[in-house]
Length: 204
Length: 300
Image 1 (cartoon, rainbow over the protein chains, first blue to last red):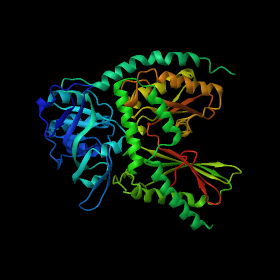
Image 2: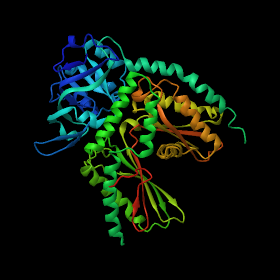
Image 3: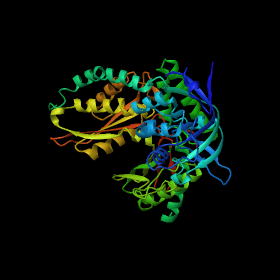
Image 4: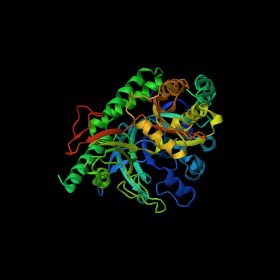
């Protein structure tokens, strides 16, 4: 059965969700990346959009801008790992419940998701047109002076996804688990190549 | 044709070419991505590849950039020494970049250092980025365009090792770059490896490596073997599309080299995401042009 989360999201909505699950989002999804995090966490500014119970999209869209009529052209996730340093504080300060991005996040965010009951999900990267067609409309825009990729775009979405759960509220982190597996195999994969080049400094 | 006329032609053609190249993958990359899809077996990988191809089709159908990060514009130029309009190229590319930002449209990504305000049209200090090579006794101008997105710039690295570290240092350095930050850069990747004698020449070569057409190889048999071995080895790590478990973290590994100092081993690693928006276009000395090397059966 298709699991659809609707904003505002409550902690109990996230209890039965685990890493590796696929979910969809209906309601409001708001973009925020490096600069939004910096303003909220380091510059003492209050986000004009209230993220409490909401969903943040680590993404910078391409928008065709006309006064009163902004049209979404393409939007897709950016690398969430860039927000790792500030995400714990951002979750604590805003009450955001869902993070959507690309690739994994680290131990600080994992701990914050467990403590404050939030999840991180991955939308397939580089699929900007598929994502854009799931956005019904742009409802608002804040902090436009940060530039098109960095400002807050407020999207109305309907069953936005598929979203792969990468951090759950139980301390699970899909990318950290996977990365450990990849690292464990690294030496074994490198070894035959290293062996084959061991005499390459010898004159031909 | 005088220089002003040539400039107008090049600006117009390049504006439209950028509009094409941000929406459609070049033929060689599209074909390779299809091959990669066949090698993945898990349900999760199938969902991801279905989304990749659904998106690429929609991008063409709706005439929109296939990835929202249209990057900063890089132009790698092979300029024939007899090409008559060398002097207008930089201005034309700058103007085409600015115009394409609105007509394609491209995302506004460009920020000047210290000012820290978005320039709004993707031009800025030394941006678009131009790299020139002069080709003797030739009258063509070949431009390789590349949309350098943030995600695939992030894993890039270069380092200078000691000879005692041997060629093994190259292997380990490539594996580290790909298995660490590379997994976030939208695999399957094209991994560019530059081998040189210092940091910046290895870095530039790593860039030229991933811009090379797919299906081409390093000129030395050992270089070609290293490309093949690295590809096979990386694809045994268990990483698939989007850095999730699978069989194909890399579409291809390309190695480019320049002679090294006897005392140094320099390695650069640069990765390109699966949405490898790299397009070749050639202008002849009468300003007629051809881009069938990257896109067959397509018009501007």
